[in-house]
Image (cartoon, rainbow, N blue to C red):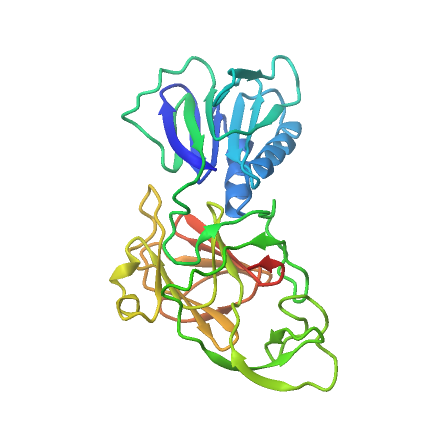
Length: 355
């Protein structure tokens, strides 16, 4: 399931969308719901993660602000929440419309809906009727509501790359970047075999369960067991995928080759020569450059390089925050989040990823 249509309704308030997550608020500052939406989207959370974060924010917020939010869940449903004076009207194909209100409750009201097509109208106050000429693809704008249509994703994700696929079981918060710690389980579609990169042979060692690993690894990248068993037998084999990259819209791709990321990555010379794959990433504000970031696999390491972008690239890891210097490669570890303009993504290890 994915959001197939999102129409903003004119009114007094603020409406926002990040991928398959949306919110409507009364616009008071500070706005904990918008903060929750931004954090969940940056952590690649789903609709349930958004609802949970919104409930926590509401319990810690004085008064009863008018809030409503909704998002596609990892298992294909639609989670909806209302608080204060907000109203949600939900229609499921083949069923009757349901209206959610919080009335005088100090606790938000939430519910999850399932169906092949779900319509969700989130409103505060008395917004204007929806105008189909307008749409909200992403970002934050003034408005009094949103008319959202959620439908089965028949076309797949919008990212470019043969291994791009929606992720299920996406964590509700960013994983901790601790060496050897298990990472959240995600599912990535297996490669189609088309345009796969040429196999790269590397030297590595086998864990006790015969998984191929970096000779310097302390823990198996696939099963997580310790790599201190003796003796170590060195092998030269095809390099396995080094992990996955989870985008802020919940989509992801396997790190088994180099990628160029930007608004128009097909313009890159390495992409045109077949040495890297294009990954198109846009946002309504245009903060992503045509050629913004390159991800390179060097041996067993994952490197990122800012391609001289206008708004820069920022790494968030266990060592803190660091802005990438243009064209200077930087090795990243699992758990690292990368801000690209107003978009973000996170590098997860291969452990727990089903192929």
